[in-house]
Image 1 (tube, helix red, strand yellow):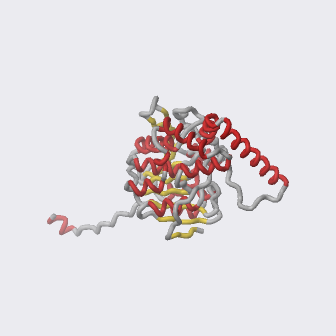
Image 2 (cartoon, rainbow, N blue to C red):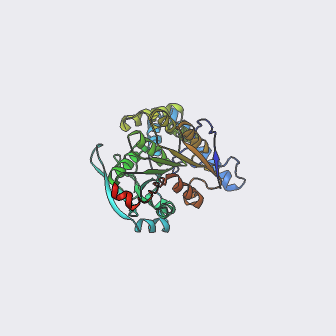
Image 3 (cartoon, rainbow, N blue to C red):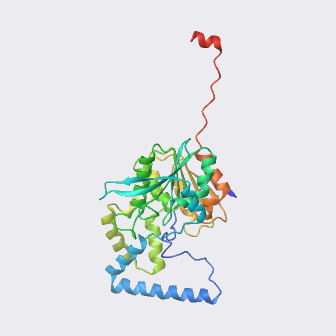
Length: 339
């Protein structure tokens, strides 16, 4: 069930997005022996990171950097594989940042406005299978892609094991230019931050939908460092080091600020109260900062099942469906002859 929220909360710190490294745990500690053992391991890990932060800050910063920029490897389900098998597949090129790199592009449908789908961290185009079917049924064409270092696309500038939201955004832009005029962009999780960066760079979308999107990369990385036990000094060193090869400051990855400083299209933010990877407050912060944006809250769908919920898919299609052109009344034959 979807609930509209009219007054979003202020910006809050989101949990770590690097799902391969750290998972957000429930507030109540587990009572089982397995839970106790897991907490003990986490405590030992924090002690190691705390010690290495003091004794080897440079090496610890490099390790934190490697974890943060390493996407997990998602496994495609049978439904995802079936969706990709039905698509027309080709390539878009990311240029201007070293050698050209290929981004795998998938297309469905032959008529209607183009909707571009942007997956999240460690995701792939096939994860949109339920949304694809819903948009096709609504009379739209659908384009999805695998970002660099994801799915079937080429490795990014730092190899297959490392990438960034910046490369995800460049993959999105390359797909948009390749696919032709884009009516709307729908993005999930870190793909939402990538879509915001693409809008800042001039992506000409008439509508945007951000599902489970994070608000602030700096805050998310700080949460990861805290969970691991890395010191603030190590976090600062890691971020300064990564800014050199990213070519941009971390402050550029604040999604609410992008809406405050750049024109954005009409935007729908959908976020689940029970999302354990990106907090609901992040979606509220984005909706509160982007002019005219609307926040809709779901319950019980979490971070991934939200992409398969029929009510959510129907809401996505309804928001981005272009208004139908007014029907013109037939001109009487006599007036037509006089014209």
